[in-house]
Image 1 (cartoon, rainbow, N blue to C red):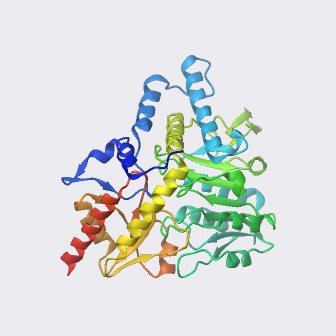
Image 2: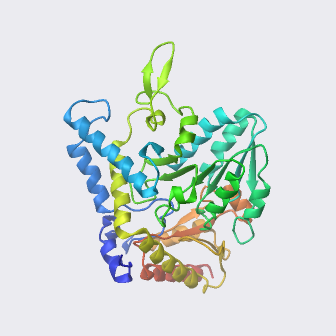
Length: 410
């Protein structure tokens, strides 16, 4: 497979129409990919094609359009299965995103498999989407939320996490890659330790599946969640992978059409996997477009994407560290393409606003990780997050922009 080199990036950039526009008269430089990625033309075309040629409700229709839409929807499920290397497409549940996927597991798992006094274990670097759903269940069922600490450098300490495991631990939920620090967590080690105690593990893969290969069978996770819109696909679509034995054990998350086998006023029986968890009309247009996005990633090659983004991350980090007064938060040995920093005494919001006027889009604030910010002793950061279509030239423009802003504040 050919390695993605700098000359190929322009060809890739041409696949993304939004990158050709200007912002405030400046060429758009988009460094907010951890929040959402831009969409290639093939994904945009797929959405248009579905609404133009294949728009009909899935599964319950006998007419041609319904059959065609159903085929697209179920083919998308198979594409996700192959992308994650899941054993069966029955283990792929379509949701609205990572947030709903985690809420689904938290609600159904705690309702059935937890008792008062049981514990859920997470880490100090989790996104709110992997904190609040568990807090809601803890409040409802009298459970305890335990938090594994991180080091001063922003790394999870596996030994400390393992010490947090007790006979009352029922599930461990951990992010694969921190959306603030870029830290890549040793999920295989965590899963292995958990399984020695027969504890299932949920992986928040919102920041990983678009950057590097994720094989659910190889890491042996029990649940995994990700969002389409962070992986070059449309918004409002997500995936929950779950081992069949666990999905079988959990009750439905929502009730309505599609998730039923039979309904009477006395009793309802539920549909088989994965439809038991997919109440109502699914976003079949979105799932087809998600499949298109995953095929686009596969065509580029995740190994190539990972290699290129690592090189760009190292280049950007090196350049940022040359700026006096700039501090990068998190220096884990294994990091993904996320860089959070503080620039002297300049408020992150001011830095982000001024960079925006230069056509440079970054994210500022607490990044839906307020507990982590408190752990780091800061209120917020400026976050630069990279994708396959970003370039060294764009990084250079970012550095020039930050230097200009430093000059303004001096």
